[in-house]
Image 1 (tube, helix red, strand yellow):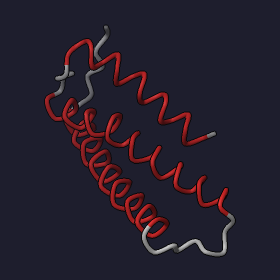
Image 2 (spheres, rainbow, N blue to C red):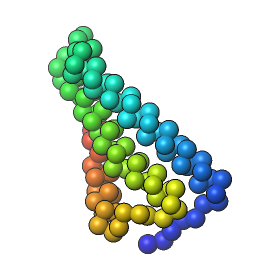
Image 3 (cartoon, rainbow, N blue to C red):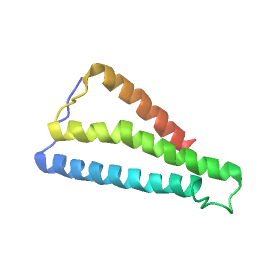
Length: 103
């Protein structure tokens, strides 16, 4: 495959942005799931709407763990670290979680 090389300043900005995105996604979506399941925070919503909110939170967490977190490692190392098999698995799962979040 073709490798895109960014200047270090851009690469560092991408690393910081990816890290902050992952941190906010994991913490925010975990709060949504805990509030929804444990504290029944969405009492005024019907069950279908609560399921949709939960589905979106799970999809976002999955996308973060499978899509963003490995990318952070690759950005830091300035190369893909996880082998060809995980590259394919990563692409498939990232697309699944992305599509889950928009459906």
